[in-house]
Amino acid sequence: MSQKRDLTFRQLVDLSFGFFGVQIAYALQSANISRIFATLGADPHQLSFFWILPPLMGMIVQPLIGKYSDRTWCRMGRRKPYLLVGSIIAVLVMLFLPNAGSLNFSARLFLGLNMAMWFGLFSLIFLDTSINIAMQPFKMMVGDMVNEWQKTTAYSIQSFLCNAGSLAGYIFPILFTWVGIANTAPKGVVPDSVIYSFYLGAAILILCVLYTFLRVKEMPPKEYADFHGFDLEKKRQQPSQGLVQLLLKAPKTFWTVGLVQFFSWAAFLYMWTYTNGAIAHNVWHTADTASEAYQAAGNWVGVLFAVQAVGSMFWAAMIPRFKSVRLAYVVSLLVGAAGFASVYFLHDKYLLFVSYFLIGFAWAAMLALPFSLLTNALKGSPYMGSYLGLFNGTICLPQIVAAATGGLVLSLAGSQPMMLLVAGVFLVLGAVCVRFIETK
Image 1 (cartoon, rainbow, N blue to C red):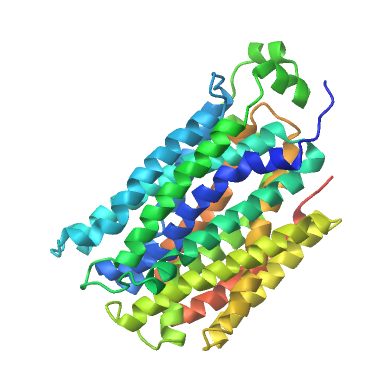
Image 2 (image 1 turned 45 degrees about the vertical axis):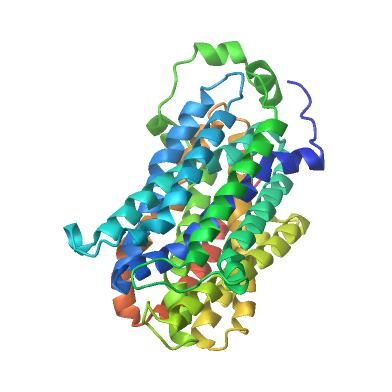
């Protein structure tokens, strides 16, 4: 086995730079989907059902991307072809999704949804599918090309760039509003401030992905085998293992980290779904989705999510300073839980900056530490991509469960602000589960 070389800081950044653009697209989706569908006429109790689709598509797509990219060795690379294709599809969908309300179809069709909502629904499916195709290769390339002692740093850089992209995506609508772009529109139509935000995000996405695509050179098969310490010829003679077989042989770390992931991602699904309604209720005292106050609340949600991204970038730089990965994980989740809980009690829009800054600590840890723990436990497995794709199920499944039960939980909780308090409880449970993770 050849010595596992260190990559320079520039090389580590290049590996993940395209993630900045991909995350702008994801941020625009997460901050505006509830707003878009509420504008199109969705009832608050229906909102969580729209959020089933993104994680469901991720749960289907990412294991397949991992499986097939594990077997892909071509002139463009191993993971990069999928990265490019996913980004191109995402750009095209981002140009169409925010225009769903402009169809002017109001007749209720199947399941009580109008034509505009069905158009938005299918656009959301394609957008999240393409984002998943573009996002997963970045995680895999770090697992492929970075040695064990640099992985926490590499995934922290990825977390930093991810949150920098989120910061940009979250503030686009309010920036466009400040320069005079309309932030209101006729009932059922998405405001221009949101539409133009998606257009700008699409342009940045493709430019950032092209930068990584052109700058990064993936390892050829022989070099990859030497780097990770396995016999390439022996590996080729072994029968290929299916995803179910790999799942049954997954290391314990896969399952214990997955348990933490369950509570963490359910909490953030509630944040994405109910923050808009919670802030409109607590600060602007409105539930009228066509009102100027509700749209102002929607813009402020983008600002709060941007503050969360700033908190995440700050904390991503702090995480490598911890000597214990488990301690960093626990502290991050507990601080995030305090941030979620405080949202329920605060009615001043500026005090909410503190809440979302603290929530950012949990988000930074969720983007970096699970993948560092898992890829080190896999010890350079030739099925790295497949395992990371399967591991995405620990991100998607909790969101599906939370989305499917969101309407029921909302009925029990009584209000959308209360759902943020429930999210805080979930992060505390996640922090408790960290104790089951074994690290070496």
